[in-house]
Amino acid sequence: MTFDPILDAVGRYYTERVREFGTTARGVDWNSEESQELRFIQLARLLPPEPFSVVDYGCGYGALVDFLERQGTDFGYQGFDISEEMVKRAAQAHSGGRRRFTTSYQELEPADYAVASGVFNVKLDTSAEGWADYVLHTIESLDGLGRTGFAFNMLTSYSDPERMRADLYYADPCAMFDHCKRSFSRQVALLHDYGLYEFTILVRK
Image (cartoon, rainbow, N blue to C red; front, side, top):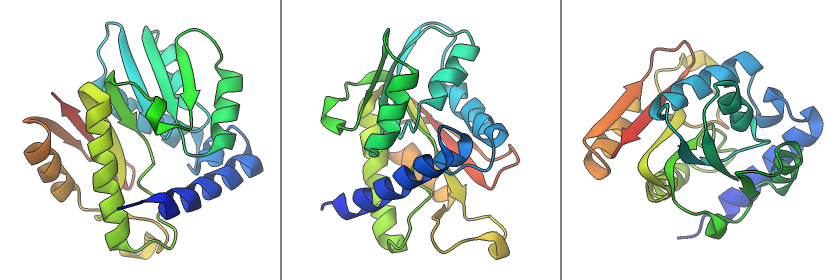
């Protein structure tokens, strides 16, 4: 099964966003910097205080680098995004050291952890079934990239019906918890208590 049509459409969508709004939260389709940071806080609950390496799957313009640096942590970083425009801007803003950005999945090397923020939300006109297959495939990739664990967030099916949009994908958090628990590790956390219409899954191996 190929997901190239999905990746091409989503890549074009995010390229247009960053060209319109620049390296801001709106440039990666979030409402505000505050909500973007709140998501990072949940994902970072997976990460240890000691030095670590991380793959940022769907890195956008590299905002997670800035967040982790503000926390004072010591980390090696690989950022991956399907939008060449995103990766170009990320590399310009975070050059050198232990920071690397790429649009090629094949160039990624397994790290201690892998995280993905927002990559499962914008399905555009892809069918719910086709997008669900893409989600499960990508979670398998996260598992392969994170030796010690991985984390991701998704819009929740518990969202208010009148606020739900046809171009977005809303997942059942209980089903995603069950899938990760059965497929990847006994140590799985479901976070659904931070005030956004979404949830975060943490998988520790």
